[in-house]
Image (tube, rainbow, N blue to C red):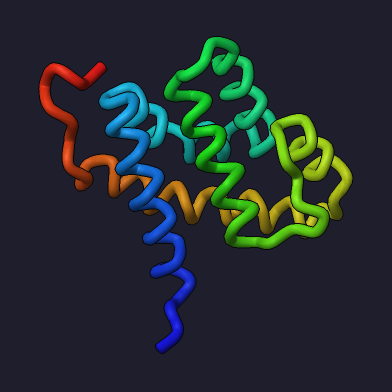
Length: 131
């Protein structure tokens, strides 16, 4: 039986939420909960650029969320050619038609809808491991 789009997004978001919470705890949770509003207020590309700017020292929760968003968009929308890094992804977004850019923005918001819910639901790391 085929999966619905929401099931596919949920599966992606569950994996990202689990890994993000495990690695960064409450910091990742806060970023994931606020990312949708940041995209709606500033736009997709400015939001990705903001997270990239905060990702200079690895590993950061911002770098984790940035990578999750880019990987989720690539996996869900299967762009050709597939951007391999942040600069390539931004260049890819800059050159696309406006209707495609809106599709990427909508997909990011849909993925974040699931991610925002799942960061509360995934198992939390032990008290000593949370940041």
